[in-house]
Length: 182
Image (cartoon, rainbow, N blue to C red):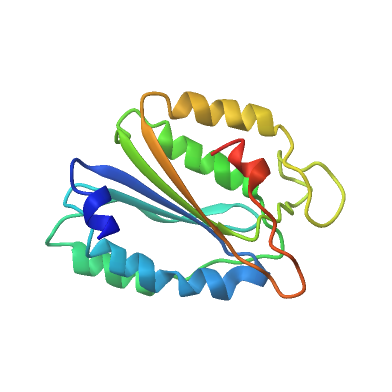
């Protein structure tokens, strides 16, 4: 019902950002089935992106325009996606990649973003978003990233859904810092 109420009025862009770090890879893989099922409910003309984020964001499904004749093939592609993984999670780079999609010249007016993560930003030292140290830490230049997203999303209706995943032995963090961006 929610899908029917939300989608279908005009083409929309749907973006998934899945945390596929080592600790969350199995949870990210479990989301392939619901995403593939969603493809069957999206309207013709909607576009879909799926990112896996670990050391860097990896674009797995790129600007797939939903069409009746290719819908089943796209759903099967999603079911068989191989999710890359690494120890690190660079949420800053993932959010920047999402902002790039939102800011495209041909972006839809309605954009739906789903972020599935434990909200532990733990990038490699090579990341421009690294603040140093070990473990979960702040995203460097988060205000700059938030400004970039605001400029990218101007004139668009953006809906964000956060799926917080709890890792064993760790309390789930709230995405408060990330909500500054998205």
